[in-house]
Length: 553
Image 1 (cartoon, rainbow, N blue to C red):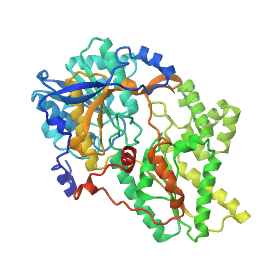
Image 2 (image 1 turned 180 degrees about the vertical axis):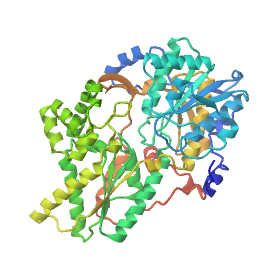
Image 3 (image 1 turned 60 degrees about the vertical axis):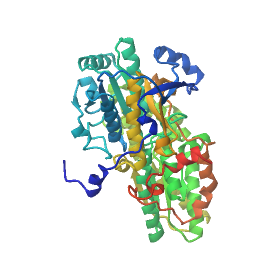
Image 4 (image 1 turned 90 degrees about the horizontal axis):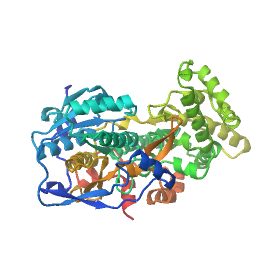
């Protein structure tokens, strides 16, 4: 390995804190009732798609008697999708738990994500390898990927490789699409009569893979702390220079959990919440008006500076643009290779424009050419528009500037508008995990092993009571299918895990709504500083503010 920093070396010595129940010699499971999250109209489709998985209960681990089988297990593990801090600790927890159950057990890491399983590319993860990655960020121990295992050929090759390697279980570490893949694999192996247990682990910095049972996805805590440090630095710079409005776009392709948490951490002048925009049916011009009014109000105080937080996925939540994007997605999906053969830029824009409805065509034509082009770019492997490549922050700057010019003519704005734009995304994905994520991820890996030992296929690891001390956390699992609904993807109806968006009636959003008007006029920003790994637990181990608000008054 390359020369390590002092912090890198020091993190190897950190011992993750885990639930006390993990130290019990024997654990049993207790079934718990679950409420279906899918709409009633989707239930029959899900039941037919997952006949062997639908309707299973959630479970929690409890003290037990007797003993589990002591056979040596061969388990495969996949890192799927974008990196999130703590992934290496999931693997470390899984590895340690397997070896504790039987030192002869093996953990195989499939290289490059799901494609590694399809192509049979793997390495055996030994203690020498795993020890090099404990408490570190990134997914580089085996690499990751976004391949979806869904075609008959891919499924058959996956089955053949699993059989050839004598796999007893497979752990998929990923987000909503990746865990949907895990559920499909689990169902496929059951139908093939293969005794292979498939278990998921909830990963995404976006924070949108959560519910009653999964209180947080791993990586969210670290990413928001990284972004909040950067935003806090910019807030201090804004108050120092007193001449720029900073438009900061934050990663989070659908939900605004990152934006909301960073708002609590830093108290910007404006923080847009995509879910509120959609609920209030706000147009692009109305959003611009909110920003312009805040700028004008601060200018009246002689403060021509400030900070604005923009969620990455905002553009998909503006109703008029959401409808436009949906049409473009369908056009691209139907056209297929014909569209892909067109030259990027003008040719693709013209093709899309010619196939849009009159209303969407008019809207498309009014957008800046750069935004039009970005809306036409290739979709990701799951059929989603790549919102991280759409410069929403620059669109808002351009439209806000026009609005302020209009307000200046009418006398409603008397100030000077200058700006800087930022996008924080990849900066937060591979940081050294916070102590919270280091503990949580190690525990998730251990939990995944317990699900395997109890042959609970089609389940995702779930640990509750996360605002308590790790010794009091409650490990268990929930069937992945119970988290699903049916969505329109690639022009087809497909089962996917339902994204957890911000609840506008929930405690976190209400707490934010109660103070944002005050923040709009204030220059007393909150400066959280960098992630702390050493010191009092109140500083080093505290979970996110939104998680604390969700679980406490």
